[in-house]
Length: 164
Image (cartoon, rainbow, N blue to C red):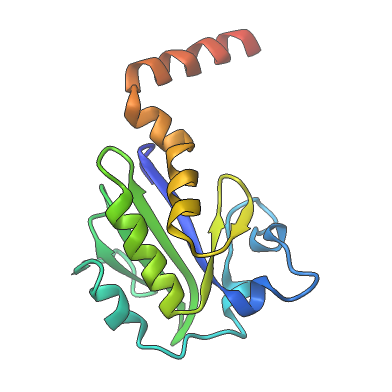
């Protein structure tokens, strides 16, 4: 994932609303996101590929287990599969350009699939709402980088120097 991309997972609302489920359950032992816990018992009823193709065009993937729509260097949607079962749905939004259109389309997709959003960086789950998603994107590290790349990198360097 590029530094200018904001990553958001789609997870079934049925899983998110189940008592006892939390965002921490969506990470593996090594700290990587793993949405298969949420998707396993909650497979989509809708034609996922057709819905995503209404947002972005399909593109080549490096793996048979991952289907990709869009441009991997810009905005894309990736669906991970284990056999025929969905394990993850991840959207990456390019913050170097206007993000409102993409946020709106991802919200439409999430609502069609009856999903919530899993904000990986914030380790939180939010409802599928354009204003909430747009706000999360605007306040993200990706957006900070895109607004002023040189300043962002200089601040990282300064923070790294203070820690040494």
